Image 1 (cartoon, rainbow, N blue to C red):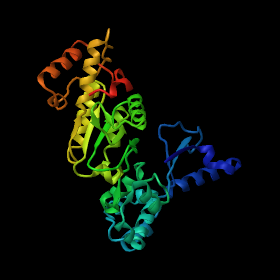
Image 2: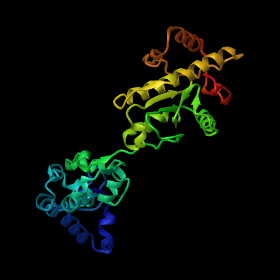
Image 3: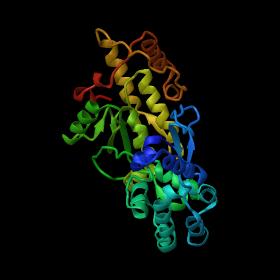
Image 4: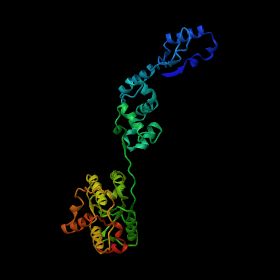
Length: 329
């Protein structure tokens, strides 16, 4: 309802006789088009009228929408929600009709899996309608599961350097950018081994983003990367955060295979750390609740060396190693 004044209701009739004005307002009241705001004062005349009124909006007729839902909508769409919320259907109708038309005329396209944005454009003409949330709301109200649309999620593409694509091979995920480029340059110079290990492919992990990059590894990786017999290795900072990144990645990837720490690199970090005048302090507020998976790959002596550094509030960054160290091993 909308509130308006007596003067607004009268409009051009403001110059009519008061008797005519009174009859006009009473007529609107009798037709149910207005209601008085009883808290408003009277106009001081006889018979009195209130000075404020509510305009009663006419209820829309949704009978045509109800018939459309029941008899002209694809049967895969559950119409119950909209039958009981016709005002919502009035707002969503354009998108519901596009979905219904697609299911009726182009459902054969669902046999081919495509990305969420591609399917969104195919159905609604808006590539981000589905992933933006509004499309998901429409699907929920229509009782359609996302799986019905045969879509897949697209992960952030990961940067990598392939020295060769022969299999089986070792693929090394490197947490930080500088070590990734340093190792890449080292291999491009004709070296086949890093710290005694023959590495076929370097993958840039980009810190915590490595988990989102690898979420859809089965879809985004080159076929040779998924070859049986390959060995996936990880190399990151020797601090709580680096260990957590590794363990989160290894756990998420466990259904695809095992990711192991690149042990030669961590041993080289420890040896060089012993010679350093000082090691940097661990950043504040790092999550120290690792699950022990990372440490399980190392012998007791190495484990003690690592924990002594970490428990002293220090850490060893990947950048402690450079090209002069890669030949060793």
